[in-house]
Image (tube, rainbow, N blue to C red; front, side):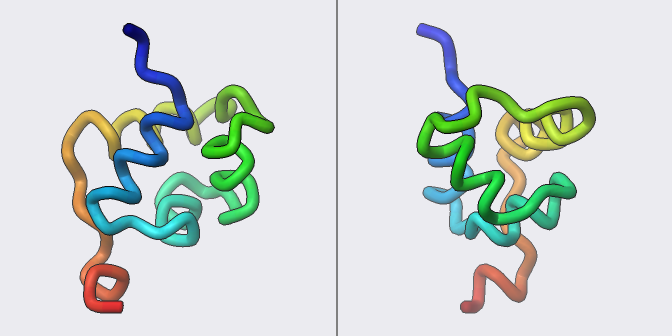
Length: 69
C-alpha cells in the first residue's frame, strides 16, 4: 500500500511534530500542512515535497522547543 502525503503528516505528528513545526521545516504554513493532512491538498509542490518526505523517511524528531511544549 502506498503511503500518502496525509499519512506522512500524521506519522510526523505521532513523533511529536506540530502542524506549525512541520510547516516551518518545509517552508509552508500550518494551514497548508493541515490541508495536506485532511486531503484537501493531495500533495505538496516542489521542495516542500522533498523536505516533507525527508522528515518522514529519516525519522526526524521535532525541534526541541516543540518537543518540550
